[in-house]
Image 1 (cartoon, rainbow, N blue to C red):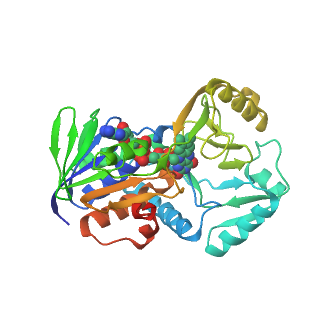
Image 2: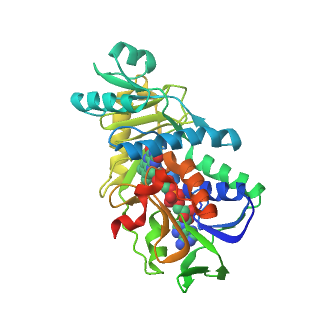
Image 3: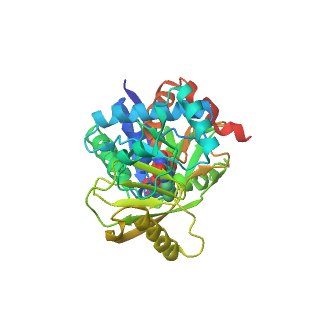
Length: 356
Ligand SMILES: Cc1cc2nc3c(=O)[nH]c(=O)nc-3n(C[C@H](O)[C@H](O)[C@H](O)COP(=O)(O)OP(=O)(O)OC[C@H]3O[C@@H](n4cnc5c(N)ncnc54)[C@H](O)[C@@H]3O)c2cc1C
């Protein structure tokens, strides 16, 4: 497909990178503008790829579709290293765990109840395992910054132009049609603009009078120094979500989004790391390296905002939490909708118009 339109993507986090990659791969002419390539929320993510509990079926379907799209993308883009390690989960009361396994197994998720003995054989380094845990075979994780930069590099090789370290101050439209973005260095003309600017998306949309209702809850993650292999997969325990990265770091948050550190991030990080050390056999040998404090771009009802904004032709919004899980599907479907105008049914529940 060739598309002569001049498309600008604002955002070099995992969402903007995936959309830009899919657009140029489909033959579009694209410029990506980012204050920071690699993203802002993206480097602070726990980066668990999942369709776990707490999601209604349509959202579960979008998430599992995206998990499948990750496998496609990893095969096409060098440097997108995924770990399909599976996950051990017991972060709910017993009755809710049982509801989760029943419901999701019915939907086709590969989740099953396992005994403490089996849990111990999967993760021998965990000190205290519960009587009831679930194991999900197909969950995994990405190294989010590496994946984002790999997508941008691969897209660059296909013709993506990248304007790095550039701040977009606002969007311009004439007669209900997007015409340009405004930067400190001048005006850049555009036939279509994708705003994938994380927590900054509402600020840019507001320059056209469009309200994007999001919140930005904080989340803190602790990172150990690289350590010998201790964990085989994701561990989703009450008050502690843990995985070991490609580099061997053990990273942990007090829930998948990381904990809210209140006014004392240093103290919260120290307490969380102390908990991690007692959680794992041999954990006393772990040394804390650093912690991150990130802000999840979270639309007010908890679900993504994806698609055009009524009243402005050529504007496409893409803002979501769970962006590491959802990036490949969002990239693929946004590209389809922008280039062909054909709406993707899986995205139907996530239009901005639902807030009207
Ligand atoms: C603590 C924590 C844990 C998380 N855990 C998970 C998890 O386990 N699994 C999961 O799937 N998701 C998780 N998430 C959510 C996920 O990380 C985010 O949804 C995702 O990173 C959002 O990516 P993004 O590209 O939209 O935003 P960002 O990474 O924030 O990128 C925004 C981009 O826009 C650019 N930008 C913004 N404004 C401008 C401007 N005016 N001009 C130019 N450029 C601009 C920035 O420079 C940046 O490049 C977590 C998030 C946090 C904070």
